[in-house]
Length: 145
Image (tube, rainbow, N blue to C red; front, side, top):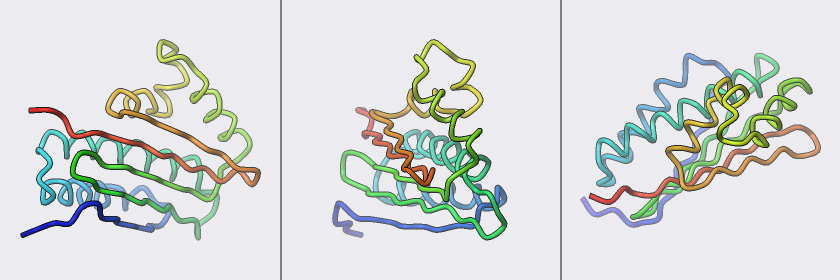
């Protein structure tokens, strides 16, 4: 099977933790079919799990809330972008503090899982707009053999 890179996958799922295992498994399988290693796929699953859990737990305020996950798969990397509908002022403040925290400051980062995402990624950019809508963009490069 020939795959043309880059290609884009867009998912939208309800703001419910029960959907996350299926989403992360799907992303893992997509990466393996795209000739990324099992190790790369598994570590990418961890990233998807962390950012999806944060989006659901801190960015979904009502039953109708949803989370959007977009993946751009290149031959040498994957880019994730996850968007939620915005959290409470308290949750947004926690996210701001975790983003500003130095990597050595584990208190804020551990609670939000941001440090593990940073460790597994080339870059992590978090944007919170005026309506408190949160977008996280992550680049993870293929590991050398």
